[in-house]
Amino acid sequence: MSSPPPLLAKGLKAVCRRVVDNFLAVVTVPLAAAALVAAARSGPEQLAGRLREARPVHLFLGAFLPAAAATVYFLLRPRAVYLVDYACFRTAPNCRVPFSAFLEHAKQVPVLNERSIRFMTKLLERSGLGEETCLPPAHHYIPPYKYCTLEAARGEVELVVFSALDDLFAKTRVSPAAVDILVVNCSLFCPTPSFVDMIVNRYGMRPDVRAVHLSGMGCSAGLISVGLARNLLQVAPRGTRALVVSTETITPNYYIGSERAMLLPNCLFRIGGAAALLSNSPAGGARFRLRHVVRTLTGAQDSAYTCVFQEEDDRGNVGINLNKDLMTIAGNALKANITAMGPLVLPASEQLLFALSFIARKVFGGGKFRPYIPDFRTAFDHFCIHAGGRAVIDELQRSLNLSDEQVEASRMALHRFGNTSSSSLWYELAYIEAKGRMRRGDRVWMIGFGSGFKCNSAAWECIEPAANAQGPWATSIHRYPVDIPDVLKH
Image (cartoon, rainbow, N blue to C red; front, side, top):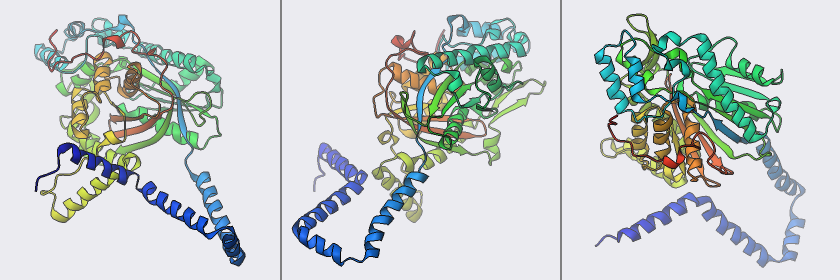
């Protein structure tokens, strides 16, 4: 017997998916129709007779229990949280660092020999970064490390954070005095007074603003901040506003040693930052609704805990050591995260296929059946993957079976801005909007990785796309996407 034509098989598969995904509607609609037909055939006199025969306790329970259940549900369900708007720091041309300038400055570091320079050159050529990424002003001096002072680091914070906040307040027309909650994350630079104190002082915020500074949480701290703001908003009065600021201060973290694993951050990390205004009320023109935040921490395993580690090298130089097993550990963290995110967002057909695959592997042994990877493309329209490096994006594209277009925002953000740590996800969202690809009702999945080791993700639903391409991509979006070769010759 011949197999059905490919188009017919594909159509049958699509029909089966639709039936499973809408199983509740498929079952309840016929039942409701049958009940209405039965009621119509009975007639009003017969129905009235049945009501007179019913006991008062039955009538009471029939009316009270549904009303009580509905009341309890509405009281206990989580309060919706909305993204009013966001803004990213717009890098200036005078901060641009072409590869040639970066390597010329590196040659002025006494401990970097020719072997280290060759390593950094090869790394940059294969990194996926472009020639327009930017470093803070202190890194433009020769030699850079002599000018990475505390004053210069504070200057970078003021440049990045205040610029992003000025743009955000202008876009939303919200006064800083109207902000009730302030959450800031910066992993490696934690001065006294803290970032939140600097922001409160600069903008004259209210003395009762609830402010938190998260440090040491790595590149995924942006979504941790969003999750914390969401939790605070769910117990706050309606109309409360929360301001989230994500950045990484590059100035004080220039590594001046020769350990290869610790030279990687020098080559990949670039200046950047973002600010987002959240609220527990859609009033005032909310643009996205926050659907889910899922956090995964694998730090109980020693290998995960130490794979991104700040330490001293043999000569006492402080830097970030990126372990060679980082991608394997990131892949395991991602699996744990999507296992938790899947049931929240995947349609019923994908969850059924995953369950059947899991049962088959348990019953018949894992060697006979390949594990089924859920198709998250059925749950999301856009993907914002942390632009931690080309290898990170490649691994997630392979693991999630995503197309080149679906990871385009991540690759282009890495090329144009470099690894901006926790703020990279917002640059990617800005890219999608600047390209005019966002539509009302579209679902967005943000995925971040960070030290610890953490994999955090957030699901958003678009309410109102951006009206224009103004933002960090305003001067360059017309040139993207660009072709990024495996090895960039300069």
